[in-house]
Length: 275
Image (cartoon, rainbow, N blue to C red):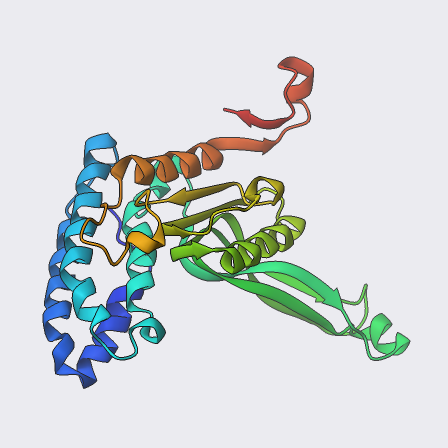
């Protein structure tokens, strides 16, 4: 059983608790959540349900503490809970897919722009800009890309992250956020067309939109609830069946052969041909 590659929420909470003792109780509850989550080894339906129960128990206990803080929205403690949860959910997939994956929040590659200062530098040592975009959780690969003039001048090596699955985590999804995610999905798929792009929000805060016209592959509303109900007495839990759907969505994508032109001659299917 592996551990998450990053404890996003825990690290942020520990830093704030070090200067604010009022968060010590939340930090204690976090450590319980962490250990209980790590103790769940498999990822069948019942085990994902147990992992989700641990998440709901923790969120129900600490979010009143976070909501009572003066700058709760700016502190980022609540959305980082879901980010870290995906670290637990996917922490043992390396053995299932047969490769060691990067699986953490990351800034991934979305483009390369050449901007030489003159034709001389274009030939000898071209200047360029690597563009990247932050994602709340990524399953992918850390690669090295070397660029230099053909047979002349120095070369330069850049480390880039190429996502296979990118997940954006939102406490609530409103129209502006949806538009931003749609723009990100379009940019990322131009650079890495085989990336699966998923949005996971706890609540929905809009009535009309057309996300099916975007490059977003799927949107999950984890509580099946509108944001207006967030302050009410009846708060839905994060549903385990939706968490399992995200897990299976990602796993199906990772287990496929994404491009195999020869398969078109045998099965008649060229794209997304399953093993």
